[in-house]
Length: 346
Image (cartoon, rainbow, N blue to C red):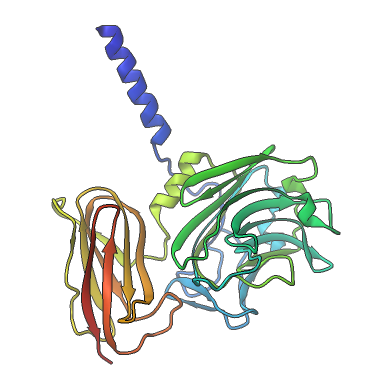
């Protein structure tokens, strides 16, 4: 009996170790663009970015809507080629059904003859209907033939997503919304030391003929270490840093799912929505117009049990103010769904 108890404790501890989340901390966080101060400044390093075209930073996010919109950072300051390992992680919300070509949300490398070469990238959606994280070095005439990469699901759905690419000395791994999608062995040419320091882009890639990624970029981070699976899961479950309007209110743990009436209602210009989760849940809180079109995603991700309050400022997912009228807000989890109406009066 004692032997069985020992085995049970060992299995329980092993299961906990596998699923435990680990905070990677900030020691290896070398570059961080959270956009929460209204700029593209690097909050962890010296690679401050500057905005191109009509891109706008508002509400703690970078808004990219046109072909000439992106943020450029100094490849020399980022210095990917000085890293032994790397993790690049980003939170974003795509503009639904507006990205049908080959798009990159983060790119570090070169562009020879308008082709992205000696670089690495995260691509949320592509012309072949996948997402991809890859590195390509040593072939400037056909860099796409030299890639080491991993594909994932395309994310052109207008929802909030998290992507992370990890590279160590021998392998590249790709994660979407905290889930490991695969690992590929690096070729001899594809090393971090071979990455060009010429360019660093957020919202576009090194292939000059490819379109920008129409989206709201909430957060981009670069670590000079290959984070492990649990650390990347921690980044995902921590959520994007710019969604500070979501607050977990202290008090007793709720016993049931609930979505309360917003207050004030009618409102102008802001209103607060409260909802309760009795258990940890992947919860999505969205706003729709009366035609059933989604206007804004206010919350989307795994959240612990608690009562939450979200402040909406009457703007859509791209920072544009919506018109006066009646709107529907909806809370959805795996087991619960409820909608309420609210009136915006300007």
